[in-house]
Image (cartoon, rainbow, N blue to C red; front, side):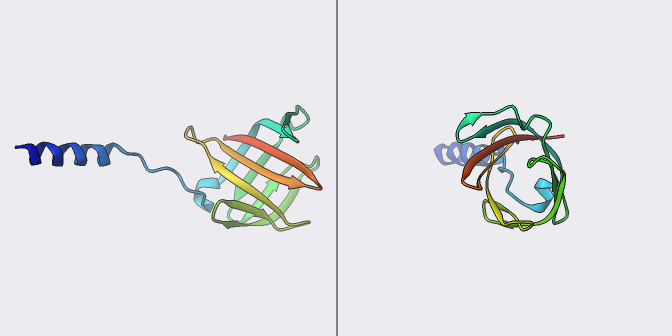
Length: 117
């Protein structure tokens, strides 16, 4: 009887576990709006209205001011902007499906927290 109870508990536990989303082209696909941004660990409002749009292997974004379209690559937990300069964004998927990107751009540490539209 004890073995059956343990088996049922383990089965129930594993069935209830949700799989965490992983960084993939499919997960990224769509428009992500920046809801929080920091420059050198200080909150900044200058990126209000900024976005990242991922479609296939093309990134369209306006985080640098004007709109930019660039190919991108994925490498484990990194999104790599390939043009006009190579920028590696460390990506973290939060439990509520927000996406946080962190990168050093021209010597300045940036952090963007985004939600999918």
